[in-house]
Image 1 (cartoon, rainbow, N blue to C red):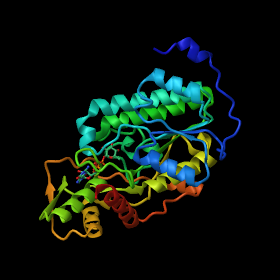
Image 2: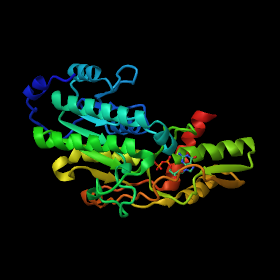
Image 3: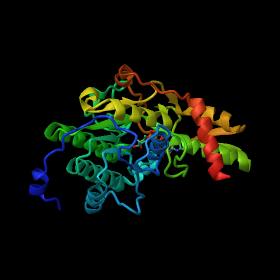
Image 4: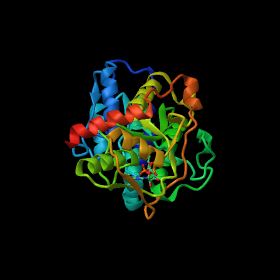
Length: 331
Ligand code: GFB
């Protein structure tokens, strides 16, 4: 259990520099995931040489003692919090206890240790599912907590909202510089292609690929196909995160900032696009017993646009390179 007196006795460290340098000690939490692996690729490519990582076997971020011992030993200067229990609509609605517990524990332990051990800046990754199910579109940052959440991902969303608030209140009370970013639905290399737990885009790549390879006469899409989703290529997200980490603090960003492309697509149109890229010629069917989830969740990206960032990868190009990745690991 946390010792309240020892926590309050620690003074916040003075923030000496707001910019990461090539030798800065950077901890990427969740480096094997979709986002974390893209961050490591991008940081390495940009010349950062002192990146530290731990697998979940080496460091269980749900365990406070392990996280505190790690921060005490390594004393990272910058932290990208990309570790999370994530999954698609079915995984979110099946493993509700794990989605809320694991994500709250990971966020609490990492953010609190970042404060305790004087991290200069932390970037916390959330998700566009934090917004109310029926939020006006496109969704502006100020719509947070203005209505009920989408039930299929409420546990995950609650944990992600808690993480935003942790960063916000530590900044307010202790003068830390913890920023939060809310990306839209992500996809790219190193995604999860497991049909039960993945998100729609990697699932459809796999379904069409397997159907073509095995001569299956139809591919089944979950739900009605009518919801809209916005898809951001993960390398673009990594680019935005480094852009913000290098140049902007929480005073400029606000409580959190959206990261997306600014446009969305119907699931049924996405399916047709992926079908074309994979080269599958047969039928598409719909399994309406599966949930649709929220009808639309398009982010308003004007705040990050005003800072000078926009996504660079066209959806079709991103899907092609994700498909190439899938073929390299699946064949
Ligand atoms: O990507 P997805 O699982 O997550 O589903 P959400 C998006 C839409 O695609 C839903 C449909 O309407 C699904 O019913 N869909 C069609 C499929 N075929 C498939 C399929 O084969 N697999 C999957 N997975 N979906 C998640 C949240 O919501 O979005 C998370 O549960 C997180 O918390 C994540 O926020 C970004 O967009 O509905």
